Length: 234
Image (cartoon, rainbow, N blue to C red; front, side, top):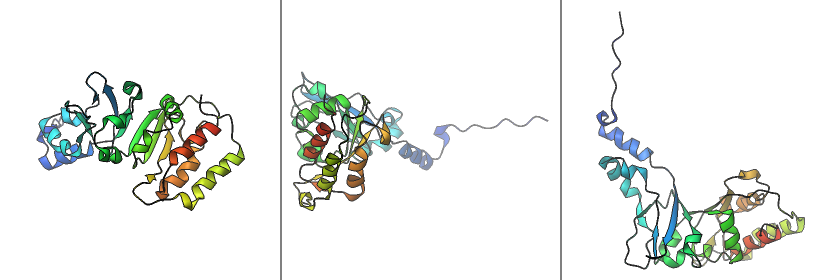
């Protein structure tokens, strides 16, 4: 005797409560590439949350989790959806030419809400040579990830500099809790990971920055010093 055919349940036949749970579980972190349309002086992105394109039900459930962000001082309205708790912004620095992303963002509070930024190794070198001025605007950034690592061992691992590195972290005089201070972000190399020979010093940096929530007035100065003294700048 043959077995009765197994019934198949389509997604639309599932209870509405279960479908909504599934839609919410499908909301995941994204890397959102933001470019500047130089003619219109407006920020654009091709990265649209996929759930907004699936169905009306999925869109209605996911839409409250995103905000229209990266507006500029022009009359052109932004169409970039961003979740400040989950998403990572990847500014296309070359598209901004000689300017900086934050200069085109009219709301300082929006800059302060960004928690995750990704830059390429090439862009990081450019930012270091320009004093990392734009990154100082993002006061609450928690993570900076580096992509496109060119590899290779750093030219110098001098103990006296690594000791200076530790002294800077230990110096309580550089700790601040005022509104003018900046959160010390964690750094990661997406290509080399924790054992990247080029970014080995990220581990020491993160050991202090990660769990302690340290705030300092000018962490970019120490980062630039480390970057240059370890021979990473071209």
